[in-house]
Length: 131
Image (tube, rainbow, N blue to C red; front, side):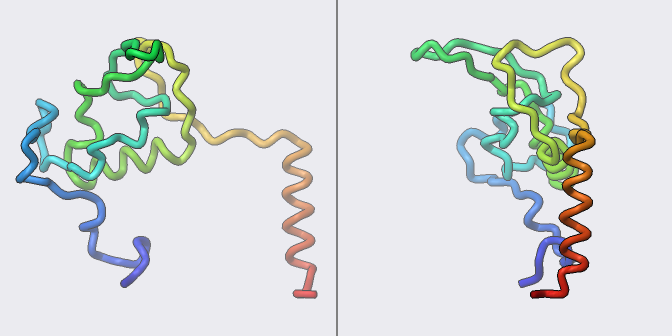
């Protein structure tokens, strides 16, 4: 078995469970329906997908993502969407979605002290010689 980054087989990026009694669970999917993200990994994070908020029986604010097709619309497209948003996940604020929705998070900028420490660690590792 080859690692994901070395294989030409992209079957791990999606599938359609045609025997699922809930299919189609999201209306408006134009490409093959991807069931891989049936439970979206972005549920706890900020995302651009359309969602509503509601309060559950325990008084917790939750997302209702039933109108979102982003993690289901095409095997490759939905895989890439989820991977891009999980590069720099931002915890969900618990507030209703903004209009327009949040933009894709940017990588954090290291402060000067962190950058100095990172460079020292790299230099130490390169000059270590394996002692």
